[in-house]
Length: 188
Image (cartoon, rainbow, N blue to C red; front, side, top):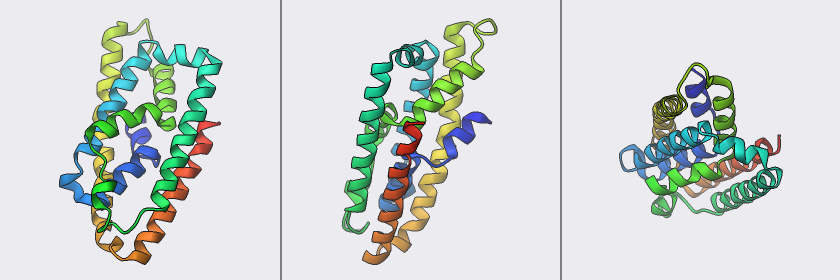
């Protein structure tokens, strides 16, 4: 339940998936939620192996990641607010497998979920570390995919409404503000 709720709630990845669905539709955009869910699964596995603990134990690394993640999210918000209509800019808005997979490593919500999931649900005495980490990564990837598909389908359904310049501009502003507001999560 935690994995699905963490995956389906609004955040930077879901904004990216929604925008991809609106730009190219559900079928052509399916590689975006696949990449995001597998990226999240790999992040969970590595976090469960202790990479997350190493990162969290190094305050300077954490600060650098927060700054880099914040700047990246603000840059994405700027790109979204200045984007054109969906018809004119469909290919530029489509995020593929590799970009979505790698995006997880700069996604502050993803890191918060990975660190809290490992420390909350992976009990070392109860599981072998390797099988426990793989189980958690698989579970999170499996929960993230249908959540991502919901966002992709929502974007695809909204596409017809976003073809006009005025409606696309409003959507771009709302998505950019939501993405910029997610920077607050980085500094909590």
